[in-house]
Image (cartoon, rainbow, N blue to C red; front, top):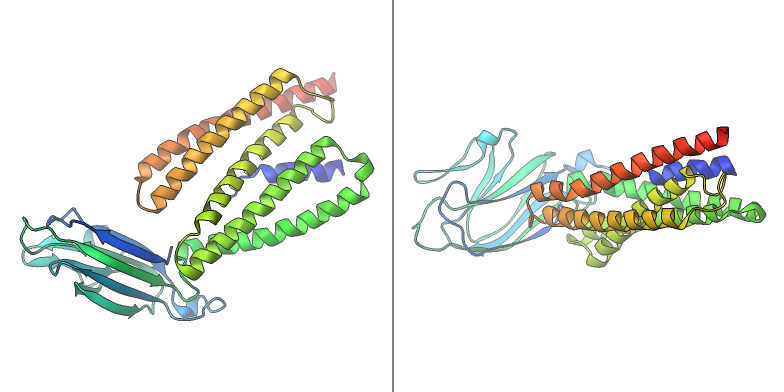
Length: 323
């Protein structure tokens, strides 16, 4: 039972690492080469995902606005080949899939697996006049609204949910068998295991909702973030108290030690929350990626504190056992 407990402690400490409906509402598009909106989406052909395919990939444009705005569907690997403003309008290359003028109500079938870019640009018309665009762009893969880079995460959380539920059942059976020898520490492990299970299930159904309806469910998104932060924090504290010898070489820990662990744990929760919010805003294109990296810095620093504290506590416990 002790060996199984140690395996679960190490497991829970590991940090597990949309096509969608996009609302377009741009109040002003200026006539410059640098001011444009770009949307990127990884699209699959039906033949590349035969087990998940329920239809054909497509991009649907339903846009209205100023007639001097160009919408270009592009697929390229070289950034120098992106559409640019030139005299007389937009300059495009041979890799242009489609070039359209507003208003647009059109569905484009996608037959090849590749990364597509949608540019909304203004290269003609009078500079002093404002131009705007409103509407929706619906990106649909053969399996639903999820982008290609999110498909793997969805499948991963589905598999992880099955594994965690199986482990929970196995752990419950062990708990019933060894209930007379159950320690307080093992109750903590049970709580972490439940957090891991709930987290993976919520993240799976959040992706399922996104894939089905093309938008994120706010309740599932918030719940997933809260469960992720709780799981990370509790798992780190659990590993730390085990390395300090609690439940094995020490029957209890001092009040000062508990206080420091609670303080560091709360700081970790706060910094993780800030990072998760920054990551969400970055995914929504409401925040620069640089700010997301800055928000990740305090999380990394507190992680280093946890790692060093764990190594030092483990070293001290081993010395105490030897002596």
